[in-house]
Image (cartoon, rainbow, N blue to C red):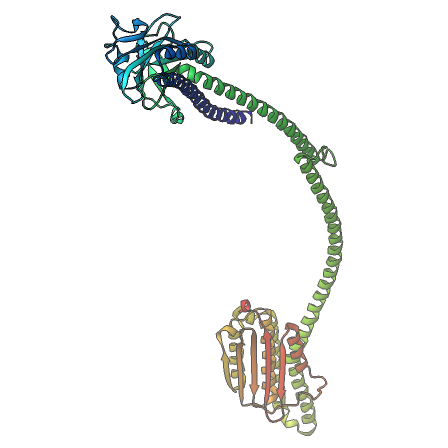
Length: 576
């Protein structure tokens, strides 16, 4: 966190320092340009005022002219008048050579109009700069009758230039100069006065374009290798007055950027210090927060090891306190839910114990019911085999007793028949026992088991049997198939013994994909299903077996119109 804050602080300080540096440089250069413009303007106004004074005295008499000019402008060094031929009429004859000014610049220029120029360059501190001004003298009709001239000493100009240099830089690094049209230094330090400025323009990128509307600002390199910021402004004394004086301000390049660099460094250090302070405060805050988190972690770990009962919630309203309160609430809720789960588990165990005892009781009853069902099955099989055989043998015994009394000669034939009946009953008993020990329907499927049973039925009875079994129904082979097979055998035995039928129909199919339907029909003598038959349990056994597997059985019969038995069992598709 400290490193991140420091990185951000350094990046922000560098950016802010660069922006501040550029702004400070622009403002400094703009201020220098404004000062230069101001000095050039002041010089131009002063010179223009004195030129106008010469213009205004052009129509006065010589005595009044000298008196007025001397009184109004004591800074004029001398004043003189020459006629159109250059002969000096009044004033200081030093204005000309041998009493004539015909060869002087001020005379020739003054004939054509107002003129200003440098007449003397001096290194004297008393007269650092001497200039001359001239203007034509005209009569009332406008003809030129002579030229008036005056020397102007400007000691105040040097004072203003030095004042500007001191104001810009007390150490003396900044310089303010006045150059003439040839680039010669006419006002400035004594070491530079009357010399030509020798700086060369440097083309390099700098933040100086922002002063384009003011004085010209650029960098120049001197012969000694120093690079200076140079700003020049022309001295304007009137649009109709010739002259090319310039005020120049120069400052070393390193000084231009020194202030900006110093400010950038201060900004950098302030940003670094603020960033360091912020990072330190953040580190202390983070350390305080991490200590609170550490204490919360230790408290949670102690709860996890069952060393304490509750999580210690720290004081305060910060995120750690809220997190600890949330953890404590979750822990309390978990404990409450655990208690409720333990109570529920105890209740479930009690209920499971009760249900287990109930299941054991039901299992015992189920085993007893299975035993009862087996007994009923054995009873039905005995009824279907031994009972019929015993009844047949009883009938034969009764017949033999009657024959012994009335016809003893036929007793041997009846004994042979009785023996055949006993033998058939024994075979039926063996067959029933074999069927009880095997499960043909479950082993091969209901369809193949019924086909074999029908074939045996045809072999015994010689009746015409029509058999229709579809493929899906033939594959049915769970424990219910065995019960349906036993019911079919019981129906076929009843047809064989009681129906006296000539044709039998048996069909097995799947209806709507959900029900197994078995239909057995005969064209025998029929019977009344509602008529009670004490001692006969065939129909009762069929209904009991159908109820045992959840099937529906329908027995329809009328005397002399045959009998039909329908069995419908609901099955699941996966049972096929």
